[in-house]
Image 1 (tube, rainbow, N blue to C red):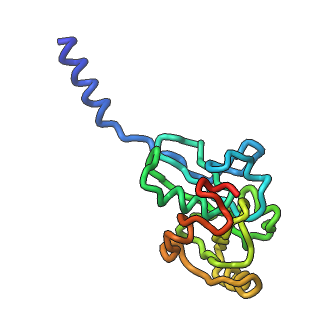
Image 2 (image 1 turned 180 degrees about the vertical axis):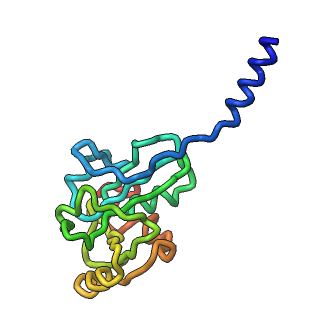
Length: 172
């Protein structure tokens, strides 16, 4: 009888609902280290990105520039499924190029991106500059060049291809 009860309890335990992982954006801190460069992301200008991975609650992967977050998402091999990517809203009142903000995050899929501007990201490469407001993105593009696109319009070669002046490993 005890054995039957134990089997029934184990079966019921397997049917419980899984808790939904919190994928809220995390504020940047002195401990926020870029995934590819292994440097503090606050030491680099321009917008940042963070990705939340399944099974790693409250431990996002940070990126020193948005293009790196897109590259990570498009790589063939992932350590875990990506649940959410967040990017800095460069149209937020507190956002500047030197200090894009620690907590002004927007969902990557909701952002309007300026692609091909004259501004370079935190690692000195062309970057995607995210905005929550399409008119702010258009104003940035008017001033710095580039065009406004949505996440699904960013071609792979804009984030995965080597850039002129860089070594194959991403170094200068």
